[in-house]
Image 1 (tube, helix red, strand yellow):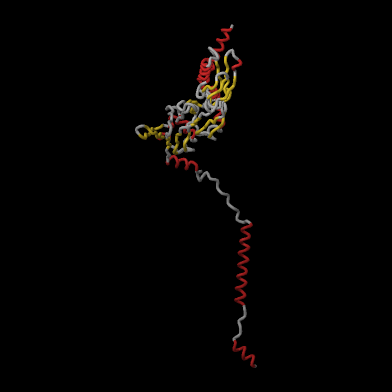
Image 2 (cartoon, rainbow, N blue to C red):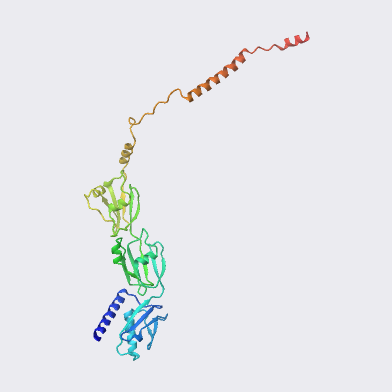
Length: 339
């Protein structure tokens, strides 16, 4: 029975050590450790890692554990117990109870980039939520750089599928750096409803010609679908790839996958524009005639009255001028005064 307990303890310690190595979380200054010695409960203790990276243990003294994984720290404590002649074959387990408050930096295409304090490992989804979530231009391929080893980078794909995003979630540790890059962009120009640049943010990080045209609001009626061009930058320079958009829409040609910085140009047709404009104008024969206005209206009577009144006034002044008596000569008036 005693051997079975020892075997179970060793298996548990091995599982914990493998999990610690898989998570790649190393002990750092300020961390709170739980140190346990098998079959020796009086040796169980919680200790805080000092700024120098050491812990002070009973009957052992200072042991440097900073920068080590918990399994490696346990081996170092076992070695110290043997060297101090405290125990002959100790079996030690070390667990991190609490990490020191450290910042995790979230950079790139998030709504609120910056540093956020965390004390324990957190799922990548929670860390991104601390930064306000992804922007519309964010790429789904997220990079996590570990604090203790800058060359160690974890790639995580944030899928649009909820089940996949939750099941494949990665852990972010205090001091890590999370980088959300900008998604690749393709450009749709020419005779479309909404020309512009569109980010490749689909669940599989791929965008086809028909998907890009749909995002641009589809081609207009005045476009020439048989002369669409795909402009792509290659190793030999810029190349133009003819696209039969009408055939693609009918399923007669396979859809083409676009690459980053591709330019899709949809040409404009003047002849189609004239035909569409002419068809939009109704013919004269079809236009409803305007009903004739009646001749005798209140406005007509008012104008006639004003005209007659003005004419009468003019005739009156003319008559007074014609029939007014002529004035006598001045010399006749003076002779009559002398008499």
